[in-house]
Length: 258
Image (tube, rainbow, N blue to C red; front, side, top):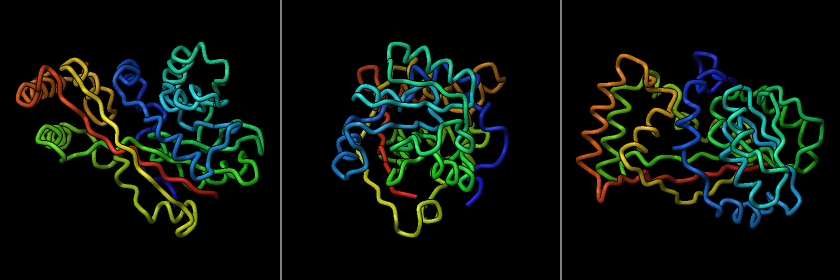
């Protein structure tokens, strides 16, 4: 196992992306919870640890359905954004911690969740930590909103833009994780998965915010950002319909016991 992604301190990558992240990153479909209940991974009274909880997007799905959630997030700006975003959720508990050192109690968690985050973890160390905090018979759920790269001409052009302007786009993509990584983490063929369709419709301002929420493109104050935004505008104008373009996703969920 080991690190899936190498490079800069991953806990700091999103510090200057928080506002756009909160506004423009996709939520998760409620069908995810239905499927997790159907396969016996999620019970009515499950206590959830959302590891790498970021701004609280994945936590909110579980909170809205009555679950207690411990949001574990090392990035100060993102953790504070989650605390503001979920300030009325009494079941939400914000924790300063990492996947490798969550600061949660032994055998206290029914379900460890990582939404759009597992590819940033040290797999070996986080597995040991998850085993420590999980109750007997507890489960781990890893999920991503996986953007379709070539389902439409717009999505193909957007992917071309990322490949051209991306700083380390190919290196940090969650698409680098494959079945071998899951076999190593859960045990060979001891994991399952399912997918649910998801989408977002964007005006140009929304599309721009979605782009700048990504840590692998130049930030808005970078010298290259103006040209990148110009190209993005051209793409939007070519493919928009009634002032909108659509991001299509497969919300892919992997689950199993450790």
